Length: 159
Length: 217
Image 1 (cartoon, rainbow over the protein chains, first blue to last red):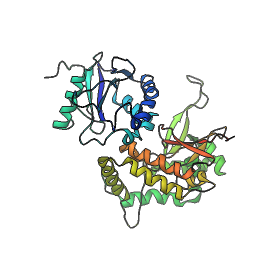
Image 2: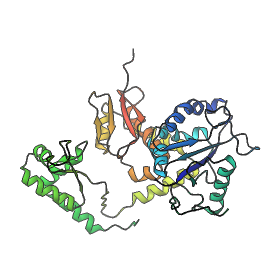
Image 3: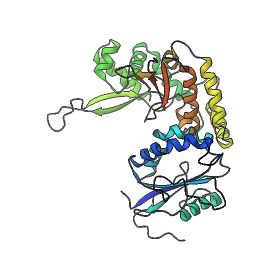
Image 4: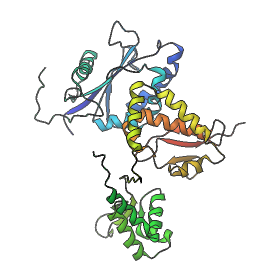
């Protein structure tokens, strides 16, 4: 057990307003799929809005009403991978293009946080920006190019 | 990862299967839902335990089977006896095409292109259409013939597919390829057939399962 946990952020442009007909299927799946995450092995935390159920009211970009964000913390990359790709979550993932516009640039970033840390929206978006600017590295990486958790002797990363 | 094919090594592995008893034992182990003991394999194949042991180990040497050791009694500690040697199909893929063909390379290029272009729904539409074109009274038989290794549960209500024919691609592009596979099988089982297809991902198996369609009133 390391003193670090894996944080992930992903953003997506919905194809229409959240209360419109195009997104009805997505909205209907949310409670089930969020409950599945909460009960998954290795799940630690996920960002929620003021309603407390999910993060669909959070807008990482004030100028963009259709950009949703999702941010969570897991014990390990494998725990996150098992939820994303090897659970019933795959059912909704296979329908992603019914609800989300094809991303033109990386839309998912991961990074290590000290156990107990809860990322803010600004922090998460900064990691995504790092990934977009510099490609995968220890401060922002992807499933395809993962980076190991810092060793125990690790103190504070340069900002 | 190397794309180079050591043709001789693959031919050696396949050559090992030329012996009929050995091939029979390979099929017994490959078809079993779990790991198989030497005694069980010998019994199903109808050969002596000693002969089975000899051939099973040849299959392990060739990289076609894998071995695990486990106590079958469930007991442990002194007096529990030696752990049994159990066999299962090796996870390593052996592919040989003569003349050489690289459909996996093409598959990866096509998948990457579809992923970047966001063409999930278009791929699913084609997969559903192609699946429907192969529909029959026996979709489970079709899946078996295509290597999915269907395995019904005790009540015959749910059929798991123990092998994923698209394994490496599905690992690399799960949303795209598993979505394609689900659509393909949905097309194959039809909209009013005996079975419905659903996502049921799990370790070391296909992401899709078949569930018996409830009797309509």
